[in-house]
Length: 278
Image 1 (cartoon, rainbow, N blue to C red):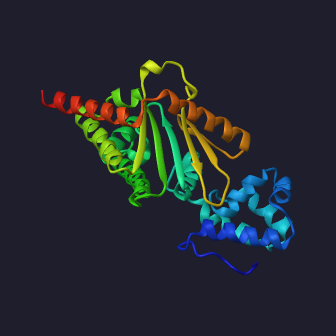
Image 2: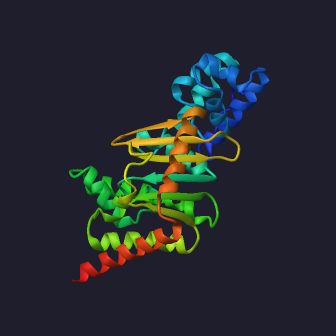
Image 3: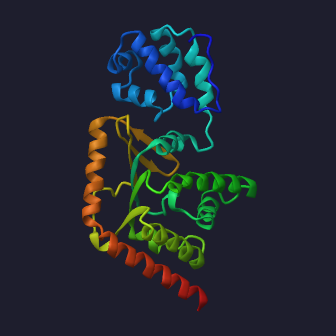
């Protein structure tokens, strides 16, 4: 292993995770036993091995020392360190691409996976009003590329709870909102996604602190991602993930049914379309 380097064009994060599993098993260590001197949990090690989490550069050197891998991980972790996403979201975006199921609560904005190009551009212009157009173009292109996850007709399962504020807040213009909500409605009607709307009438709820994303994987423990303005945390602790999973379940219980949610989304879209013409 010491003389082998990964080809970045062939999913280096997944290959690196597989090499970590081989090296750990060769050393006779469990995931928990490897995690202890690294000050991470056994589930974190499992996620690195499964490729749902990148191996952080700061862990590469101690991993090489513990597993006696001759600097292999120090050399190759750089291959997976680069990302086209902001630092606080990069790891979550990479995990999202590997998930078999994604459940998301959006309190203010249409989730990135469901945004149209026009909507995404307006969001990025609002975040960075003085950014050059080339930077906005790149951000928009990267966001739309994420939506390619939905090109598969069945995987991943995407279940979103949208706060009613997502529907009512005009981002860009009423024309942009009409197009965006019709896009979501089309995905619902094609049975590609499940969407529920959490109405204002629901009052206080279990996730008033902000956005929430839950991700489940085929061969790795689940993750939760919580996000704020320019910040984000990817959580792997089973107790924390379970707590956020319960919060999401409570949200779905308080939200409108999928059929009533679709009716509301289409109704609001028609209102926007009518208003833009009058």
